[in-house]
Image 1: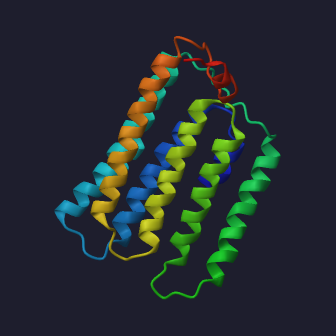
Image 2 (image 1 turned 90 degrees about the vertical axis):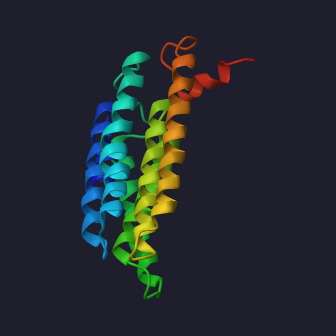
Amino acid sequence: MSLLYMSIANRINTYLRILVLQGIILFGTTFLTLTSLNVVNLMLIMLETLVFKAFAVPWFMNYIIKRNKITREAEPYLPNFVSLIIVTLIIVSAIILSSSIKDQNLDKTFFVVALSTLFTGLYLIVSRKKIITHVIGYLVIENGVFVLSLAVANEMPMLVNLGIMLDIFASVLILGIFFNKIGDVLKDPDANLLSNLKD
């Protein structure tokens, strides 16, 4: 449902609120699906989902938006109705693909959510003009990778997810620095204006 809502959202602040919601949902889902829960696992889950995905990254993105005075509109290339249809087709295609896979170790519910999230994130990147929405699409893809790790095994591979978290943290930090520097050149950076940049 959050993916469908994200496909028709017009404001960047709405995207950030959906990222917060997805982080909370990921924590609840992971907490309920772990078969053996100890203090270390619980702390890593809370660090990765609640602290990092639900609070730290959206807050940092909001800071970048205010720092660079980015307008609130997401500025999609396609109308909202078309985006809603495309994301719906992505979800239906993921369900059809999942039903065709015969594997006892695969959790098909998580697999459908993971594929839908991955491809919706890619769609957000290619269908929005602003660079900041491309970063948000990248974070949605990372949420899909997190869910995919739940789909392929009952026990979440903590080291893999910790590595993903550190990778995303570094990427968002670098993109934040990139935005702070590019904001001095372009008043309202979007993907089309990047072609104006020179050495």
